[in-house]
Image (cartoon, rainbow, N blue to C red; front, side, top):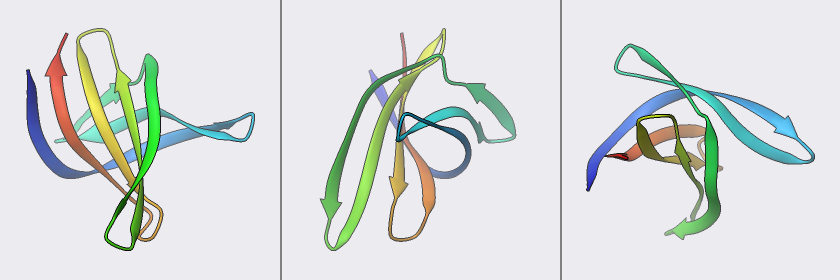
Length: 81
């Protein structure tokens, strides 16, 4: 079951083969290493374009949102796997 988080986070990314790949993110004073990028898609929220990254580590799945207009990241949801 997913839990809504909706908090701003810091994300370290890599640029590989013309794509952005989240590597690590900091949330609530802790660092989380992304082990797998499961899905990437974009959506519009009004006029704002947001790129959604569904990622996971060894214990949880996360939904990260990157605003291309404001250049900010948010952790939207988290689920135990």
